[in-house]
Image 1 (cartoon, rainbow, N blue to C red):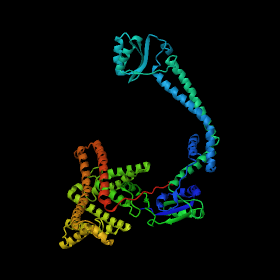
Image 2 (cartoon, one colour):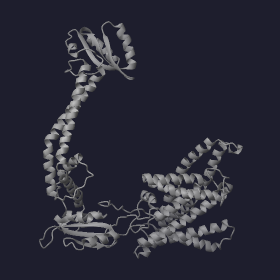
Image 3 (cartoon, rainbow, N blue to C red):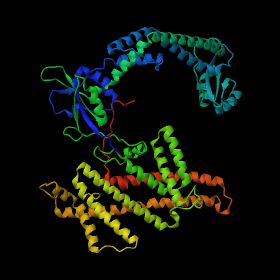
Image 4 (cartoon, rainbow, N blue to C red):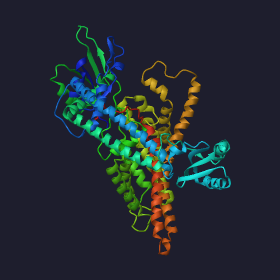
Length: 634
Protein backbone atom coordinates (compact mmCIF):
# COMPACT_ATOMS: atom_id res chain seq x y z
CA UNK A 1 0.00 0.00 0.00
CA UNK A 2 1.00 3.64 -0.38
CA UNK A 3 1.69 5.76 2.69
CA UNK A 4 -0.81 8.58 3.10
CA UNK A 5 0.91 11.98 2.81
CA UNK A 6 0.31 15.51 4.01
CA UNK A 7 2.00 18.70 2.87
CA UNK A 8 3.24 21.05 5.58
CA UNK A 9 4.00 24.75 5.03
CA UNK A 10 6.38 25.84 7.80
CA UNK A 11 7.44 29.45 8.35
CA UNK A 12 9.37 31.36 11.00
CA UNK A 13 12.16 33.91 11.56
CA UNK A 14 15.07 33.41 9.16
CA UNK A 15 17.66 33.15 11.92
CA UNK A 16 15.67 30.44 13.72
CA UNK A 17 15.77 27.83 10.93
CA UNK A 18 18.70 25.82 12.36
CA UNK A 19 16.99 25.48 15.75
CA UNK A 20 13.77 24.29 14.11
CA UNK A 21 15.60 21.68 12.05
CA UNK A 22 17.61 20.38 15.02
CA UNK A 23 14.77 20.46 17.56
CA UNK A 24 11.86 19.27 15.43
CA UNK A 25 12.44 18.31 11.80
CA UNK A 26 15.39 15.96 12.37
CA UNK A 27 13.12 13.62 14.32
CA UNK A 28 11.03 12.75 11.26
CA UNK A 29 11.35 11.79 7.62
CA UNK A 30 10.35 14.76 5.45
CA UNK A 31 10.44 15.05 1.67
CA UNK A 32 11.12 18.74 1.08
CA UNK A 33 10.00 20.49 -2.08
CA UNK A 34 11.82 23.53 -3.45
CA UNK A 35 9.83 26.45 -2.07
CA UNK A 36 11.11 28.80 -4.78
CA UNK A 37 9.63 26.56 -7.48
CA UNK A 38 6.23 26.55 -5.78
CA UNK A 39 6.24 30.33 -5.10
CA UNK A 40 7.92 31.62 -8.25
CA UNK A 41 4.80 33.52 -9.27
CA UNK A 42 4.79 35.60 -6.07
CA UNK A 43 6.59 38.86 -5.48
CA UNK A 44 8.95 39.57 -2.58
CA UNK A 45 10.20 35.97 -2.58
CA UNK A 46 13.88 35.15 -2.92
CA UNK A 47 16.11 32.10 -2.39
CA UNK A 48 17.54 31.44 1.06
CA UNK A 49 21.22 32.10 0.33
CA UNK A 50 23.85 32.05 3.07
CA UNK A 51 27.53 31.15 3.37
CA UNK A 52 28.40 28.30 5.68
CA UNK A 53 30.81 30.05 8.09
CA UNK A 54 31.52 26.85 9.96
CA UNK A 55 32.43 24.54 7.09
CA UNK A 56 36.19 25.00 7.46
CA UNK A 57 36.04 24.46 11.22
CA UNK A 58 33.92 21.35 10.67
CA UNK A 59 36.51 19.88 8.29
CA UNK A 60 39.30 20.59 10.77
CA UNK A 61 37.20 18.96 13.49
CA UNK A 62 36.88 15.80 11.39
CA UNK A 63 40.68 15.70 11.14
CA UNK A 64 41.00 16.10 14.93
CA UNK A 65 38.60 13.18 15.52
CA UNK A 66 41.21 10.87 13.98
CA UNK A 67 43.19 11.27 17.21
CA UNK A 68 40.22 10.34 19.42
CA UNK A 69 38.05 7.36 20.16
CA UNK A 70 34.91 8.51 18.35
CA UNK A 71 32.79 5.97 20.24
CA UNK A 72 33.20 8.14 23.33
CA UNK A 73 30.27 10.44 24.13
CA UNK A 74 30.08 13.80 25.86
CA UNK A 75 27.33 15.67 27.70
CA UNK A 76 29.02 19.01 27.15
CA UNK A 77 26.98 21.45 25.03
CA UNK A 78 28.47 24.38 23.11
CA UNK A 79 27.21 26.94 20.62
CA UNK A 80 28.35 26.93 17.01
CA UNK A 81 30.60 29.94 17.64
CA UNK A 82 32.16 28.32 20.70
CA UNK A 83 32.65 25.09 18.76
CA UNK A 84 34.43 26.98 15.99
CA UNK A 85 36.78 28.58 18.53
CA UNK A 86 37.57 25.22 20.17
CA UNK A 87 38.41 23.53 16.88
CA UNK A 88 40.52 26.39 15.52
CA UNK A 89 42.52 26.85 18.75
CA UNK A 90 43.20 23.11 19.00
CA UNK A 91 44.25 23.02 15.36
CA UNK A 92 46.68 25.89 15.96
CA UNK A 93 48.31 23.95 18.81
CA UNK A 94 48.79 21.04 16.43
CA UNK A 95 50.28 23.07 13.58
CA UNK A 96 53.87 22.84 14.86
CA UNK A 97 53.63 19.09 15.43
CA UNK A 98 51.87 18.59 12.08
CA UNK A 99 54.68 20.46 10.24
CA UNK A 100 57.28 18.19 11.86
CA UNK A 101 55.17 15.14 10.98
CA UNK A 102 55.07 16.16 7.32
CA UNK A 103 58.83 16.72 7.34
CA UNK A 104 59.48 13.28 8.86
CA UNK A 105 57.02 11.68 6.44
CA UNK A 106 58.83 13.24 3.47
CA UNK A 107 62.19 11.98 4.75
CA UNK A 108 60.72 8.51 5.13
CA UNK A 109 59.38 8.58 1.59
CA UNK A 110 62.69 9.66 0.09
CA UNK A 111 64.67 7.13 2.14
CA UNK A 112 62.39 4.26 1.13
CA UNK A 113 62.69 5.24 -2.54
CA UNK A 114 66.50 5.33 -2.16
CA UNK A 115 66.52 1.86 -0.57
CA UNK A 116 64.35 0.46 -3.37
CA UNK A 117 66.83 1.79 -5.93
CA UNK A 118 69.89 0.26 -4.22
CA UNK A 119 68.37 -3.06 -3.05
CA UNK A 120 69.01 -5.05 -6.28
CA UNK A 121 72.76 -4.28 -6.14
CA UNK A 122 73.58 -5.37 -2.58
CA UNK A 123 75.86 -8.18 -3.80
CA UNK A 124 78.23 -5.70 -5.48
CA UNK A 125 81.09 -5.76 -2.96
CA UNK A 126 82.83 -2.62 -4.17
CA UNK A 127 82.81 0.95 -2.93
CA UNK A 128 80.98 3.07 -5.46
CA UNK A 129 83.12 6.11 -4.73
CA UNK A 130 86.04 4.21 -6.29
CA UNK A 131 83.97 3.41 -9.39
CA UNK A 132 83.54 7.12 -10.02
CA UNK A 133 87.34 7.52 -9.99
CA UNK A 134 87.70 5.39 -13.14
CA UNK A 135 89.02 7.55 -16.04
CA UNK A 136 89.22 5.04 -18.87
CA UNK A 137 86.43 2.64 -17.92
CA UNK A 138 82.71 3.50 -18.06
CA UNK A 139 79.99 1.58 -16.19
CA UNK A 140 76.19 1.42 -16.10
CA UNK A 141 73.77 -0.15 -13.59
CA UNK A 142 70.52 -1.72 -14.81
CA UNK A 143 68.44 -4.81 -15.36
CA UNK A 144 67.74 -7.21 -18.21
CA UNK A 145 65.09 -9.87 -18.76
CA UNK A 146 66.23 -13.43 -18.03
CA UNK A 147 65.67 -14.69 -21.59
CA UNK A 148 67.81 -11.85 -22.99
CA UNK A 149 70.47 -12.31 -20.31
CA UNK A 150 71.36 -15.77 -21.60
CA UNK A 151 71.99 -14.29 -25.06
CA UNK A 152 74.00 -11.45 -23.50
CA UNK A 153 76.21 -13.94 -21.65
CA UNK A 154 77.31 -15.49 -24.94
CA UNK A 155 78.07 -12.07 -26.41
CA UNK A 156 80.06 -10.92 -23.36
CA UNK A 157 82.04 -14.17 -23.37
CA UNK A 158 83.09 -13.58 -26.97
CA UNK A 159 83.69 -9.79 -26.69
CA UNK A 160 86.93 -8.75 -24.92
CA UNK A 161 85.80 -5.12 -24.53
CA UNK A 162 82.97 -5.58 -21.99
CA UNK A 163 82.29 -7.22 -18.65
CA UNK A 164 78.89 -7.82 -16.99
CA UNK A 165 78.75 -8.30 -13.21
CA UNK A 166 75.53 -9.99 -11.98
CA UNK A 167 74.25 -8.61 -8.63
CA UNK A 168 70.78 -10.12 -8.19
CA UNK A 169 68.04 -11.99 -10.07
CA UNK A 170 64.50 -13.32 -9.92
CA UNK A 171 62.26 -15.23 -12.32
CA UNK A 172 61.87 -12.27 -14.64
CA UNK A 173 64.96 -10.03 -14.38
CA UNK A 174 68.70 -10.05 -13.74
CA UNK A 175 70.21 -6.95 -12.10
CA UNK A 176 73.83 -5.98 -12.56
CA UNK A 177 76.43 -3.54 -13.85
CA UNK A 178 78.42 -3.64 -17.08
CA UNK A 179 81.88 -2.16 -17.72
CA UNK A 180 83.24 -0.95 -21.10
CA UNK A 181 86.34 1.01 -22.22
CA UNK A 182 85.63 4.69 -22.76
CA UNK A 183 86.77 4.33 -26.39
CA UNK A 184 84.08 1.66 -27.10
CA UNK A 185 81.27 3.15 -25.03
CA UNK A 186 78.94 4.32 -27.82
CA UNK A 187 78.94 1.09 -29.82
CA UNK A 188 78.59 -1.16 -26.76
CA UNK A 189 75.75 0.96 -25.31
CA UNK A 190 73.89 0.28 -28.55
CA UNK A 191 74.58 -3.45 -28.19
CA UNK A 192 73.24 -3.54 -24.61
CA UNK A 193 70.21 -1.53 -25.73
CA UNK A 194 69.53 -4.15 -28.42
CA UNK A 195 69.34 -6.76 -25.63
CA UNK A 196 66.72 -4.49 -23.93
CA UNK A 197 68.98 -3.60 -21.05
CA UNK A 198 67.09 -1.09 -18.84
CA UNK A 199 69.35 1.50 -17.25
CA UNK A 200 68.94 2.30 -13.53
CA UNK A 201 70.45 5.41 -11.97
CA UNK A 202 72.09 4.59 -8.65
CA UNK A 203 72.12 7.54 -6.18
CA UNK A 204 75.19 9.71 -6.72
CA UNK A 205 75.70 10.28 -2.98
CA UNK A 206 76.46 6.60 -2.40
CA UNK A 207 80.08 6.27 -1.17
CA UNK A 208 80.32 2.85 0.53
CA UNK A 209 79.39 -0.54 -0.83
CA UNK A 210 75.65 -0.94 -1.53
CA UNK A 211 75.24 -3.35 1.41
CA UNK A 212 76.93 -1.00 3.87
CA UNK A 213 74.83 1.91 2.66
CA UNK A 214 71.65 -0.17 2.84
CA UNK A 215 72.41 -1.17 6.45
CA UNK A 216 72.95 2.48 7.39
CA UNK A 217 69.70 3.40 5.67
CA UNK A 218 67.77 0.76 7.65
CA UNK A 219 69.10 2.26 10.86
CA UNK A 220 68.07 5.75 9.72
CA UNK A 221 64.63 4.40 8.71
CA UNK A 222 64.09 2.93 12.19
CA UNK A 223 65.02 6.26 13.76
CA UNK A 224 62.57 8.14 11.55
CA UNK A 225 59.80 5.64 12.36
CA UNK A 226 60.39 6.22 16.06
CA UNK A 227 60.32 9.98 15.52
CA UNK A 228 57.04 9.70 13.63
CA UNK A 229 55.48 7.66 16.44
CA UNK A 230 56.71 10.17 19.01
CA UNK A 231 55.14 13.04 17.09
CA UNK A 232 51.92 11.05 16.70
CA UNK A 233 51.75 10.49 20.47
CA UNK A 234 52.46 14.19 21.06
CA UNK A 235 49.59 15.17 18.75
CA UNK A 236 47.24 12.72 20.47
CA UNK A 237 48.16 14.14 23.89
CA UNK A 238 47.33 17.66 22.69
CA UNK A 239 43.91 16.64 21.36
CA UNK A 240 43.07 14.27 24.23
CA UNK A 241 43.83 17.06 26.67
CA UNK A 242 40.71 18.78 25.27
CA UNK A 243 38.79 15.61 24.37
CA UNK A 244 35.41 16.57 25.82
CA UNK A 245 35.50 20.02 24.25
CA UNK A 246 36.58 18.70 20.85
CA UNK A 247 33.89 15.99 20.80
CA UNK A 248 31.20 18.50 21.77
CA UNK A 249 32.46 20.96 19.14
CA UNK A 250 32.53 18.29 16.40
CA UNK A 251 28.99 17.19 17.28
CA UNK A 252 27.72 20.77 17.23
CA UNK A 253 29.42 21.69 13.94
CA UNK A 254 28.44 18.38 12.34
CA UNK A 255 24.80 19.01 13.18
CA UNK A 256 25.01 22.60 11.96
CA UNK A 257 26.65 21.72 8.63
CA UNK A 258 24.27 18.83 8.11
CA UNK A 259 21.26 21.07 8.72
CA UNK A 260 22.72 23.85 6.59
CA UNK A 261 21.59 22.02 3.43
CA UNK A 262 17.98 22.78 4.38
CA UNK A 263 18.51 26.25 2.90
CA UNK A 264 18.51 24.95 -0.67
CA UNK A 265 14.85 23.96 -0.22
CA UNK A 266 13.77 27.14 1.59
CA UNK A 267 12.68 30.55 0.37
CA UNK A 268 12.77 33.90 2.18
CA UNK A 269 10.21 36.67 2.31
CA UNK A 270 10.11 40.15 3.82
CA UNK A 271 6.83 40.96 5.64
CA UNK A 272 5.04 44.13 4.52
CA UNK A 273 5.00 45.47 8.09
CA UNK A 274 8.80 45.73 8.01
CA UNK A 275 9.49 42.87 10.40
CA UNK A 276 12.44 40.50 10.11
CA UNK A 277 12.82 38.14 7.18
CA UNK A 278 10.90 34.86 7.34
CA UNK A 279 11.84 31.47 5.90
CA UNK A 280 9.31 29.25 4.10
CA UNK A 281 9.58 25.47 3.92
CA UNK A 282 7.37 23.02 2.00
CA UNK A 283 7.59 19.35 2.91
CA UNK A 284 5.65 16.14 2.45
CA UNK A 285 5.32 13.89 5.49
CA UNK A 286 3.52 10.63 6.23
CA UNK A 287 0.20 11.61 7.81
CA UNK A 288 0.97 9.76 11.06
CA UNK A 289 4.25 11.71 11.47
CA UNK A 290 2.67 15.01 10.47
CA UNK A 291 0.31 14.81 13.44
CA UNK A 292 3.20 14.11 15.82
CA UNK A 293 5.24 17.01 14.45
CA UNK A 294 2.33 19.41 14.80
CA UNK A 295 1.89 18.38 18.44
CA UNK A 296 5.63 18.92 19.03
CA UNK A 297 5.51 22.43 17.54
CA UNK A 298 2.14 23.41 19.01
CA UNK A 299 3.58 25.48 21.87
CA UNK A 300 6.43 27.06 19.87
CA UNK A 301 5.40 30.66 19.22
CA UNK A 302 8.15 31.26 16.63
CA UNK A 303 6.81 28.63 14.22
CA UNK A 304 3.72 28.81 12.02
CA UNK A 305 2.49 25.95 9.87
CA UNK A 306 -0.37 25.06 7.54
CA UNK A 307 -1.38 21.49 6.70
CA UNK A 308 -2.52 20.65 3.18
CA UNK A 309 -4.05 17.49 1.75
CA UNK A 310 -2.74 15.96 -1.51
CA UNK A 311 -4.68 17.17 -4.50
CA UNK A 312 -5.48 20.60 -3.06
CA UNK A 313 -4.63 23.54 -5.32
CA UNK A 314 -0.94 24.34 -5.23
CA UNK A 315 -0.10 21.13 -3.45
CA UNK A 316 1.93 19.71 -6.28
CA UNK A 317 2.55 16.04 -6.97
CA UNK A 318 2.92 14.01 -3.74
CA UNK A 319 5.87 11.61 -3.51
CA UNK A 320 5.25 7.89 -3.18
CA UNK A 321 6.38 5.92 -0.15
CA UNK A 322 5.48 2.25 -0.11
CA UNK A 323 4.32 0.73 3.15
CA UNK A 324 3.93 -3.04 3.03
CA UNK A 325 4.16 -5.90 5.56
CA UNK A 326 7.61 -7.47 5.93
CA UNK A 327 6.62 -10.48 3.87
CA UNK A 328 5.89 -8.24 0.85
CA UNK A 329 8.91 -5.94 1.26
CA UNK A 330 11.19 -7.92 -1.11
CA UNK A 331 8.65 -7.63 -3.96
CA UNK A 332 8.91 -3.84 -3.87
CA UNK A 333 12.12 -4.40 -5.86
CA UNK A 334 10.15 -5.41 -8.97
CA UNK A 335 7.74 -2.50 -8.54
CA UNK A 336 10.62 -0.01 -8.26
CA UNK A 337 12.33 -1.51 -11.32
CA UNK A 338 9.22 -0.76 -13.40
CA UNK A 339 8.49 2.56 -11.71
CA UNK A 340 6.87 3.61 -8.44
CA UNK A 341 3.09 4.01 -8.49
CA UNK A 342 1.72 7.52 -8.64
CA UNK A 343 0.30 8.73 -5.33
CA UNK A 344 -3.33 8.04 -6.30
CA UNK A 345 -2.48 4.81 -8.12
CA UNK A 346 -2.88 1.37 -6.60
CA UNK A 347 0.28 -0.26 -5.21
CA UNK A 348 0.78 -3.49 -7.23
CA UNK A 349 3.19 -5.10 -4.73
CA UNK A 350 0.64 -7.62 -3.43
CA UNK A 351 -0.43 -8.46 -6.99
CA UNK A 352 3.21 -9.04 -8.00
CA UNK A 353 3.93 -11.13 -4.91
CA UNK A 354 0.99 -13.45 -5.59
CA UNK A 355 1.24 -13.79 -9.36
CA UNK A 356 5.03 -13.92 -9.66
CA UNK A 357 5.52 -16.63 -7.06
CA UNK A 358 2.51 -18.59 -8.31
CA UNK A 359 3.70 -18.63 -11.93
CA UNK A 360 7.25 -19.46 -10.83
CA UNK A 361 5.93 -22.42 -8.85
CA UNK A 362 3.84 -23.69 -11.79
CA UNK A 363 6.84 -23.48 -14.14
CA UNK A 364 9.39 -24.84 -11.65
CA UNK A 365 7.44 -27.40 -9.65
CA UNK A 366 9.83 -29.65 -7.74
CA UNK A 367 9.74 -30.44 -4.01
CA UNK A 368 13.49 -30.88 -3.56
CA UNK A 369 14.77 -28.04 -5.73
CA UNK A 370 12.07 -25.73 -4.40
CA UNK A 371 13.14 -26.50 -0.82
CA UNK A 372 16.74 -25.62 -1.74
CA UNK A 373 15.51 -22.27 -3.10
CA UNK A 374 13.61 -21.62 0.14
CA UNK A 375 16.60 -22.38 2.39
CA UNK A 376 19.13 -20.52 0.23
CA UNK A 377 16.85 -17.52 -0.24
CA UNK A 378 16.04 -17.22 3.46
CA UNK A 379 19.73 -17.40 4.43
CA UNK A 380 20.81 -14.77 1.90
CA UNK A 381 17.90 -12.51 2.81
CA UNK A 382 18.62 -12.72 6.55
CA UNK A 383 22.42 -12.49 6.30
CA UNK A 384 22.89 -10.13 3.32
CA UNK A 385 19.54 -8.34 3.20
CA UNK A 386 19.15 -9.17 -0.53
CA UNK A 387 15.58 -8.48 -1.58
CA UNK A 388 15.94 -10.75 -4.61
CA UNK A 389 16.82 -13.60 -2.24
CA UNK A 390 13.57 -12.97 -0.34
CA UNK A 391 11.66 -13.24 -3.62
CA UNK A 392 13.45 -16.49 -4.46
CA UNK A 393 12.54 -17.92 -1.05
CA UNK A 394 8.85 -17.09 -1.51
CA UNK A 395 8.87 -18.50 -5.06
CA UNK A 396 10.52 -21.64 -3.69
CA UNK A 397 7.52 -22.21 -1.40
CA UNK A 398 5.23 -22.39 -4.44
CA UNK A 399 7.77 -24.63 -6.19
CA UNK A 400 7.51 -27.07 -3.28
CA UNK A 401 3.69 -26.91 -3.38
CA UNK A 402 3.51 -27.63 -7.12
CA UNK A 403 6.20 -30.27 -6.71
CA UNK A 404 3.73 -32.19 -4.54
CA UNK A 405 0.95 -31.52 -7.08
CA UNK A 406 3.20 -32.84 -9.91
CA UNK A 407 4.77 -35.63 -7.83
CA UNK A 408 8.36 -34.54 -8.49
CA UNK A 409 11.31 -34.60 -6.03
CA UNK A 410 14.75 -33.69 -7.41
CA UNK A 411 13.58 -35.00 -10.78
CA UNK A 412 12.35 -38.37 -9.42
CA UNK A 413 8.86 -38.51 -10.93
CA UNK A 414 7.80 -41.71 -9.18
CA UNK A 415 9.08 -40.96 -5.67
CA UNK A 416 5.76 -39.54 -4.47
CA UNK A 417 2.26 -39.71 -5.99
CA UNK A 418 1.08 -36.66 -7.94
CA UNK A 419 -1.71 -34.92 -6.06
CA UNK A 420 -2.97 -33.26 -9.25
CA UNK A 421 -1.31 -34.13 -12.57
CA UNK A 422 1.91 -34.98 -14.37
CA UNK A 423 2.62 -32.08 -16.80
CA UNK A 424 4.17 -34.39 -19.42
CA UNK A 425 1.30 -36.87 -19.05
CA UNK A 426 -1.07 -34.57 -20.97
CA UNK A 427 0.96 -32.04 -22.95
CA UNK A 428 -1.95 -30.36 -24.73
CA UNK A 429 -3.97 -30.20 -21.52
CA UNK A 430 -1.05 -28.59 -19.71
CA UNK A 431 -0.67 -25.91 -22.39
CA UNK A 432 -4.42 -25.19 -22.50
CA UNK A 433 -4.55 -24.83 -18.71
CA UNK A 434 -1.65 -22.36 -18.95
CA UNK A 435 -3.50 -20.29 -21.57
CA UNK A 436 -6.68 -20.31 -19.47
CA UNK A 437 -4.65 -19.27 -16.42
CA UNK A 438 -3.13 -16.41 -18.43
CA UNK A 439 -6.56 -15.25 -19.62
CA UNK A 440 -7.74 -15.13 -16.01
CA UNK A 441 -4.73 -13.01 -15.02
CA UNK A 442 -5.35 -10.61 -17.91
CA UNK A 443 -8.95 -10.20 -16.75
CA UNK A 444 -7.70 -9.43 -13.23
CA UNK A 445 -5.29 -6.85 -14.69
CA UNK A 446 -8.22 -5.23 -16.51
CA UNK A 447 -10.20 -5.04 -13.27
CA UNK A 448 -7.22 -3.35 -11.62
CA UNK A 449 -7.10 -0.86 -14.48
CA UNK A 450 -10.75 -0.02 -13.82
CA UNK A 451 -9.91 0.55 -10.14
CA UNK A 452 -6.95 2.78 -11.00
CA UNK A 453 -9.05 4.77 -13.48
CA UNK A 454 -11.68 5.36 -10.79
CA UNK A 455 -8.99 6.49 -8.33
CA UNK A 456 -7.55 8.92 -10.90
CA UNK A 457 -11.03 10.01 -12.03
CA UNK A 458 -10.11 9.26 -15.65
CA UNK A 459 -13.56 8.29 -16.89
CA UNK A 460 -12.56 7.96 -20.54
CA UNK A 461 -9.92 5.40 -19.58
CA UNK A 462 -12.44 3.75 -17.26
CA UNK A 463 -15.09 3.27 -19.95
CA UNK A 464 -13.38 3.07 -23.35
CA UNK A 465 -9.79 1.93 -22.85
CA UNK A 466 -8.90 -1.50 -24.24
CA UNK A 467 -8.32 -2.57 -20.64
CA UNK A 468 -11.27 -0.56 -19.31
CA UNK A 469 -14.90 -1.65 -18.97
CA UNK A 470 -15.35 -1.92 -22.74
CA UNK A 471 -12.22 -4.06 -23.13
CA UNK A 472 -13.19 -6.11 -20.08
CA UNK A 473 -16.61 -6.93 -21.58
CA UNK A 474 -15.18 -7.72 -25.01
CA UNK A 475 -12.26 -9.88 -23.84
CA UNK A 476 -14.24 -11.42 -20.97
CA UNK A 477 -17.02 -12.62 -23.29
CA UNK A 478 -14.47 -14.15 -25.68
CA UNK A 479 -12.86 -15.97 -22.75
CA UNK A 480 -16.26 -17.28 -21.61
CA UNK A 481 -17.01 -18.52 -25.14
CA UNK A 482 -13.62 -20.24 -25.34
CA UNK A 483 -14.25 -21.88 -21.97
CA UNK A 484 -17.65 -23.16 -23.18
CA UNK A 485 -16.10 -24.66 -26.30
CA UNK A 486 -13.27 -26.27 -24.29
CA UNK A 487 -15.76 -27.91 -21.91
CA UNK A 488 -18.04 -29.16 -24.69
CA UNK A 489 -20.91 -26.70 -24.14
CA UNK A 490 -22.80 -24.82 -26.85
CA UNK A 491 -22.14 -21.17 -27.61
CA UNK A 492 -24.86 -18.51 -27.14
CA UNK A 493 -26.67 -17.21 -30.19
CA UNK A 494 -24.32 -15.67 -32.73
CA UNK A 495 -26.23 -12.39 -32.56
CA UNK A 496 -25.57 -12.22 -28.84
CA UNK A 497 -21.89 -13.10 -29.40
CA UNK A 498 -21.59 -10.43 -32.09
CA UNK A 499 -23.22 -7.78 -29.93
CA UNK A 500 -21.29 -8.70 -26.77
CA UNK A 501 -17.96 -8.58 -28.61
CA UNK A 502 -18.60 -6.03 -31.35
CA UNK A 503 -20.19 -3.19 -29.36
CA UNK A 504 -17.46 -2.97 -26.66
CA UNK A 505 -14.78 -3.30 -29.37
CA UNK A 506 -16.38 -0.47 -31.32
CA UNK A 507 -16.37 1.64 -28.16
CA UNK A 508 -12.64 0.96 -27.79
CA UNK A 509 -12.01 2.00 -31.41
CA UNK A 510 -14.08 5.17 -30.95
CA UNK A 511 -12.37 6.03 -27.66
CA UNK A 512 -11.22 9.52 -28.67
CA UNK A 513 -14.56 10.95 -29.89
CA UNK A 514 -16.44 9.22 -27.06
CA UNK A 515 -14.08 10.74 -24.48
CA UNK A 516 -14.57 14.18 -26.02
CA UNK A 517 -18.32 13.66 -25.94
CA UNK A 518 -18.07 12.61 -22.30
CA UNK A 519 -16.12 15.79 -21.49
CA UNK A 520 -18.66 17.86 -23.48
CA UNK A 521 -16.14 19.30 -25.91
CA UNK A 522 -17.37 21.18 -28.97
CA UNK A 523 -15.42 19.10 -31.49
CA UNK A 524 -16.08 15.40 -31.10
CA UNK A 525 -13.79 14.19 -33.87
CA UNK A 526 -10.12 15.23 -34.05
CA UNK A 527 -9.01 17.63 -36.78
CA UNK A 528 -8.49 16.13 -40.22
CA UNK A 529 -10.39 13.81 -42.51
CA UNK A 530 -13.09 11.71 -40.87
CA UNK A 531 -12.52 8.99 -43.44
CA UNK A 532 -8.85 8.82 -42.42
CA UNK A 533 -9.90 8.70 -38.77
CA UNK A 534 -12.05 5.63 -39.39
CA UNK A 535 -9.26 3.96 -41.39
CA UNK A 536 -6.86 4.54 -38.49
CA UNK A 537 -9.51 3.24 -36.06
CA UNK A 538 -9.80 0.01 -38.05
CA UNK A 539 -6.03 -0.42 -38.01
CA UNK A 540 -6.04 0.25 -34.27
CA UNK A 541 -8.83 -2.31 -33.89
CA UNK A 542 -6.72 -4.93 -35.61
CA UNK A 543 -3.86 -4.06 -33.25
CA UNK A 544 -6.15 -4.33 -30.19
CA UNK A 545 -7.50 -7.74 -31.24
CA UNK A 546 -3.98 -8.93 -32.04
CA UNK A 547 -2.70 -7.75 -28.65
CA UNK A 548 -5.52 -9.64 -26.89
CA UNK A 549 -4.56 -12.79 -28.74
CA UNK A 550 -0.76 -12.49 -28.38
CA UNK A 551 -0.95 -11.55 -24.71
CA UNK A 552 -3.07 -14.61 -24.02
CA UNK A 553 -0.98 -17.02 -26.10
CA UNK A 554 2.15 -15.67 -24.40
CA UNK A 555 1.11 -17.55 -21.27
CA UNK A 556 1.73 -20.82 -23.11
CA UNK A 557 5.28 -20.51 -21.77
CA UNK A 558 3.93 -21.17 -18.26
CA UNK A 559 2.92 -24.68 -19.29
CA UNK A 560 5.91 -25.08 -21.64
CA UNK A 561 8.40 -24.55 -18.83
CA UNK A 562 6.54 -27.00 -16.61
CA UNK A 563 7.00 -29.54 -19.42
CA UNK A 564 10.58 -28.42 -19.96
CA UNK A 565 11.51 -29.01 -16.32
CA UNK A 566 10.16 -32.55 -16.38
CA UNK A 567 11.87 -33.22 -19.72
CA UNK A 568 15.28 -31.88 -18.63
CA UNK A 569 15.22 -33.89 -15.41
CA UNK A 570 14.20 -36.94 -17.46
CA UNK A 571 17.36 -36.51 -19.56
CA UNK A 572 19.44 -36.25 -16.37
CA UNK A 573 17.95 -39.49 -15.03
CA UNK A 574 18.56 -41.25 -18.35
CA UNK A 575 22.21 -40.16 -18.39
CA UNK A 576 22.58 -41.31 -14.79
CA UNK A 577 21.25 -44.78 -15.76
CA UNK A 578 18.29 -44.69 -13.37
CA UNK A 579 16.32 -47.24 -15.41
CA UNK A 580 19.14 -49.79 -14.96
CA UNK A 581 18.67 -49.78 -11.18
CA UNK A 582 22.20 -48.61 -10.34
CA UNK A 583 22.23 -44.84 -11.00
CA UNK A 584 25.32 -42.61 -11.05
CA UNK A 585 24.60 -40.29 -8.12
CA UNK A 586 27.24 -37.78 -9.16
CA UNK A 587 25.39 -37.19 -12.44
CA UNK A 588 22.08 -36.91 -10.58
CA UNK A 589 23.44 -34.32 -8.14
CA UNK A 590 25.29 -32.38 -10.84
CA UNK A 591 22.23 -32.50 -13.12
CA UNK A 592 19.98 -31.16 -10.38
CA UNK A 593 22.37 -28.29 -9.69
CA UNK A 594 22.68 -27.47 -13.40
CA UNK A 595 18.94 -27.66 -14.12
CA UNK A 596 17.99 -25.72 -10.99
CA UNK A 597 20.50 -22.99 -11.75
CA UNK A 598 19.84 -22.55 -15.48
CA UNK A 599 16.10 -23.15 -15.50
CA UNK A 600 15.56 -21.18 -12.30
CA UNK A 601 17.28 -18.17 -13.88
CA UNK A 602 15.34 -18.46 -17.16
CA UNK A 603 12.00 -19.03 -15.40
CA UNK A 604 12.60 -16.03 -13.13
CA UNK A 605 13.23 -13.79 -16.15
CA UNK A 606 10.28 -15.15 -18.14
CA UNK A 607 7.85 -14.68 -15.26
CA UNK A 608 9.06 -11.10 -14.81
CA UNK A 609 8.50 -10.53 -18.52
CA UNK A 610 4.92 -11.77 -18.20
CA UNK A 611 4.40 -9.43 -15.24
CA UNK A 612 5.67 -6.35 -17.04
CA UNK A 613 4.47 -6.84 -20.61
CA UNK A 614 1.26 -8.83 -20.29
CA UNK A 615 -0.16 -7.45 -17.03
CA UNK A 616 1.53 -4.24 -15.82
CA UNK A 617 1.09 -2.60 -19.23
CA UNK A 618 -2.68 -2.99 -18.87
CA UNK A 619 -3.27 -1.25 -15.55
CA UNK A 620 -0.11 0.36 -14.25
CA UNK A 621 1.75 3.52 -15.27
CA UNK A 622 4.55 3.65 -12.66
CA UNK A 623 4.96 7.43 -12.91
CA UNK A 624 5.32 8.15 -9.20
CA UNK A 625 8.23 10.10 -7.75
CA UNK A 626 10.09 8.49 -4.83
CA UNK A 627 9.86 9.81 -1.29
CA UNK A 628 13.36 11.13 -0.49
CA UNK A 629 13.72 12.03 3.15
CA UNK A 630 15.93 15.00 4.02
CA UNK A 631 17.13 13.08 7.04
CA UNK A 632 16.77 9.31 7.45
CA UNK A 633 15.57 8.19 10.83
CA UNK A 634 18.14 6.07 12.62
